[in-house]
Length: 198
Figure 1 (cartoon, rainbow, N blue to C red):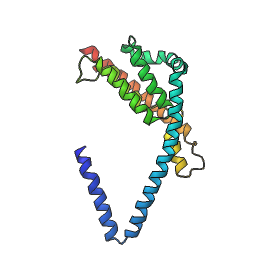
Figure 2 (tube, helix red, strand yellow):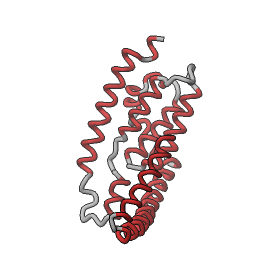
Figure 3 (tube, rainbow, N blue to C red):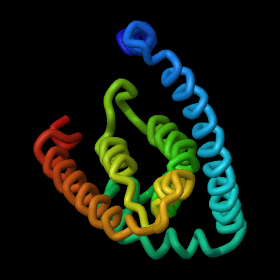
């Protein structure tokens, strides 16, 4: 982190000096203002998208829909997190995170994921070491299976794409492949080097 805090200002300073030295100060100035404008427009687009899906998530939490979903994915949860069978609270927190990721709500999934990780840490007999369940959760959360890539679609809309949802099939293929590879690799690692050796 300290290295990044040093590198980014250096890159920025070198870019500005080079632009001025090469006679591109006007383009630099225009680019900076265009970037600010694009950032504001993108933020507004994200805000609307996040409000919509976070509202849907809140409604789902207040109804039986979410609980039904948790029951539907129970076999998957048992396969991914066999050591959490006796802890429905943590399973529900992980399920909420997975729902948010499936809907493409990375920003909503993050606090849900942190909450689930904190709950697992409370049950962790070795606080300085990840449990098998925590390791698997990190992999599943990072792979982020998405049915609706909300953030990517929002970015494409803000950039004037004629078909912002055209990447859905590619996203499905990429996230399914990443999730499968990550889960299998983690299962193998847990089998050989996981908690069972302790």
